[in-house]
Image (cartoon, rainbow, N blue to C red):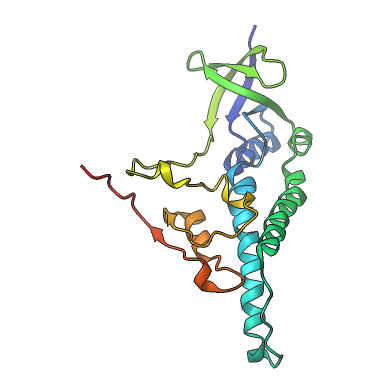
Length: 218
């Protein structure tokens, strides 16, 4: 026997959390189905880590501009250990913020939070493979809100695989500063990575942005 909800939200990123919390606050019976963790790209691989990285870069920039404000100019000392500290700070900021997106927060609003992978059985029902047990749970809703977000796209560029490329899911975990960085993609995250100039010698770090994928040869 399937359970019936007014709304089932699939995806616990920024959009899904707002939809689920808002509907529950208005009195709807709401379930939120998320595959991994609440918070989505914004919390773990997008807005929060990119802006934290930019904050460190801006601090170094302002230190070099101190004379404009009547202070002695300071050149921040930088090393691979410094960059590891910066990315560790990124992860610390994520940990500080993520409790605001904890399941308990939305359960208090009246949202039933379910971790698992859903499949549609028909236009009104989904079957969720529960993350912890692997058991299948059938759920029914009057409406569904699809808020599954996106994942990094790897364009079919000849030789790209051999470069050892990384995506926004990897870059905020780096412990050493790349000597050169080519950013492919001019979305929000790509633009912010391009803005995050290195806290030391700019010659060691090159940022480039392309708005469209390079077409493969042939």
